[in-house]
Image (cartoon, rainbow, N blue to C red):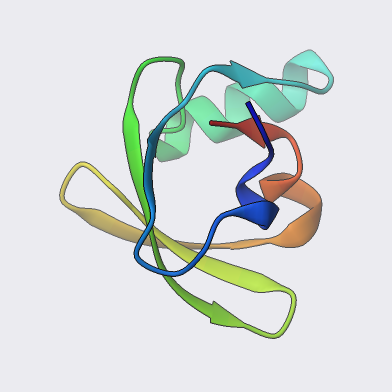
Length: 70
């Protein structure tokens, strides 16, 4: 298990854990980042990641990506 920030472009993984305060977890859940969902790293842009969750591509910064473990 490791944070999304360590995943390579093209890598897929199942979300195992989300850390942080409840507000952060709720925000990530609203974006589709919930335990057992599959995510794919689409691209890296500086400190940001573009990830695919379900049929949506979402840009998140490294601060949030560090809280999502696959």
